[in-house]
Length: 472
Image (cartoon, rainbow, N blue to C red; front, side):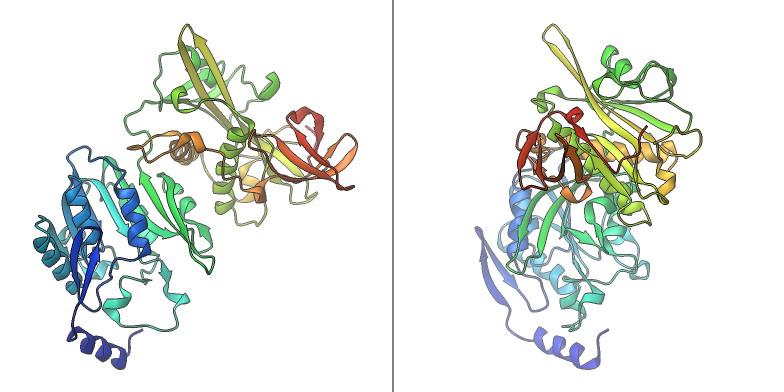
């Protein structure tokens, strides 16, 4: 990757004069090969400033560069440790902390190939309340010109399985953040043709994009918050219930608690329809904080269904095999007929008791093809092999990502503002006219256009027919 010429160039640069930079209220000396504060640093800083120190206030920055973010974190009240694979960055972080009268513990190392040493040489596993990382987000295969081994360490992802995968695995195994901790990473929207969010969700983690920046060339970087979903909540399993939604609404559960059952005797869908139960289907419900969700809109239902569909599509080896029928049905494409079949759906329900309002989210999904009624499909048909325990882990992360408020980073009031139209079923019939979906209104209604260029806004899904949906 690095020839003698590039390495010699880097050695020559190291003998040059360091840059003198003013960032926020800090004076920084930045040697050559050390990553200086840039737009991505500012983006991560804007998120960091929103997080009030919590827990034991233990903070780790991976890839500290000049030390700018670590110094900022210390002024916010965190007990800061900083690491970098570039020894000159470690020296810069240490020097700049002293120059700004800040106490920071520094170490050389970071996430990388196992032959680079043990993780314990640069951090204390599983002990941090907040971990941040301005991740090298340029894949090695996209890079044709290399600068030098130390300069490129801050820019290029050379890990065999990808740094995002390794980071997610370390979080999953409690090797970085504490059970109640948060990771903040700056990364691209996509990793190896997958959404970065889906990569982390597939590991049973919760994640949410809390800030983003789009450059003139159209590339978008984002700050993702990552955490363990609902770690202080009850995750209950039962053999048989009338319905998981009813059980949770009528029981003594707290927001974040979940319940799944092997059998439902009286499961319901939208409009009071009966949910046909069988052994190989997932039935689960989550209690939500009604104070964070002012109203249950079609837009919110659709957003939850789309988040689930996006994760399934990322796992399926078949392209365009998953869809959502507005507002809340999950569909798979039949291999032979190419028509769509329902595999499940989501359902919000609420119950008022005096001044107390209970709100739950139920999710039902067919995982296997056995014993299915006509017009019903399963995840198995599109190559998504998950048992109910694995599916719960994934869904727990998705629900937490949408509705768990972590240190005021999450913003549930804005859920549903980012509708991915690509995964919505497009063709429908309305008032005997063939129409195509064009969007979702702010009120959550379906926006459609007829073949005669007439525009309609539809609030009732019962008024629509879907010509490519198998009858049930």
